[in-house]
Image (cartoon, rainbow, N blue to C red; front, side, top):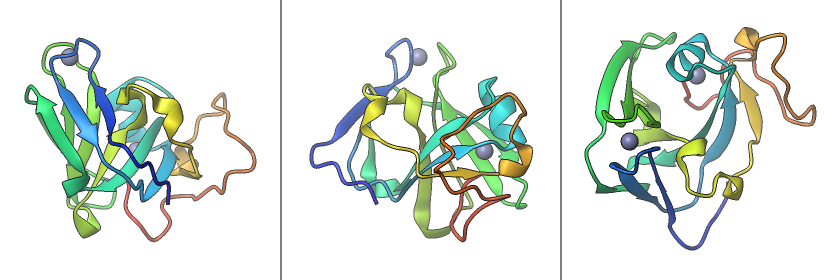
Length: 144
Ligand SMILES: [Zn+2]
Ligand SMILES: [Zn+2]
């Protein structure tokens, strides 16, 4: 669990949607799943798992796109309707979890990836810290 004492600010590329995130981060993972690849246009996305109550939207209203996750649950991706910047994911996740896109934080270096999830979908050209534990899908806690 990664504690940060002050709230971390974040938002989208154009600045219309802004948020404030309170700690602790329950987990920080590199997610290689195919949906994250499509949704971000990258090899993987870095997600920060928090309880829904830890995120406060301070400006704007994110747009949403809902799809069906590999686990069968609904996955709702929240993003800026103006610039398309990805913000966080919610859905039928246990414990009111949401997953912040680490790159949307104003200072993404404040969080540190602890694992690689959906490693079965990792691309041959994507590289991760070899010290990180890798999970074919998920450990016992949700991600998409
Ligand atoms: Zn924006
Ligand atoms: Zn994913």
